[in-house]
Amino acid sequence: MDERLRDSLAKIVEFYDQRKVGDSGPLGFRRSSDLATLLTCSERLIREGIIIPGETAFLDLGCADGRVNLFFSYLVSLSVGIEIDEWTLDEYGPLRSSLEAALEKGALLPPPENIFLFQGDATDKSLHDAIARRTGRTLRSFDVFYTYLMMHDVFAEMLAESARKGAIFMVYGLDAILPQYPGFRLLRDMSPMEGILALYERV
Image (cartoon, rainbow, N blue to C red; front, side, top):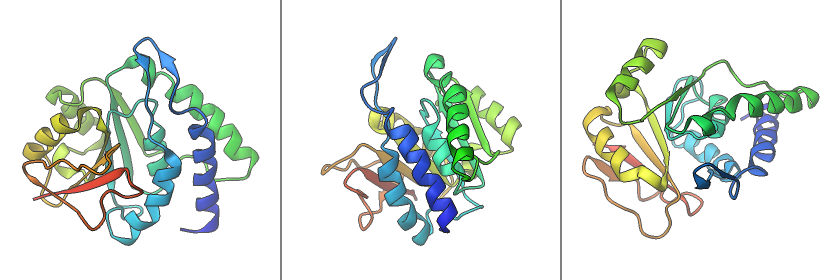
């Protein structure tokens, strides 16, 4: 990871992590992935071949305001997110505009044009069909899936049926007790990264 890329990611972390846990909206208390943690994890994810810069297709199942998608967009070829709550996803545009201004001021890298966010139910087949039409990618052709802990078991069941062998399912928000999912094996030597991110491989 070169210095300008690292500095750009650090600015993204600074921008979003001051707006993370504790905000409230129509649905009450909100949770957000800690991008500082993901920044720490990212170098190992690259080193271990989980993320292949410029090649990996990434899908966030429950992307909220798109912050994880924006972060990973710098490291992957395609960054797709799905969010069921329209009011949350609506925050993506204004936040991105403010972030872009901060990045430009610091002569840092702007977000790549490889981010596609969709509003809807991440388990809805018709939505996945829409994603395929827009991006050319079906569930079976994504390399890495990501979710916050909330619906991890539901998504694991879906991916056990639809993801390709070898695809990675990353679950943020886990601790000492790591669940098992039929159709996946836990990457024990890597989980939980930074005490919170567990990685599973589709078998």
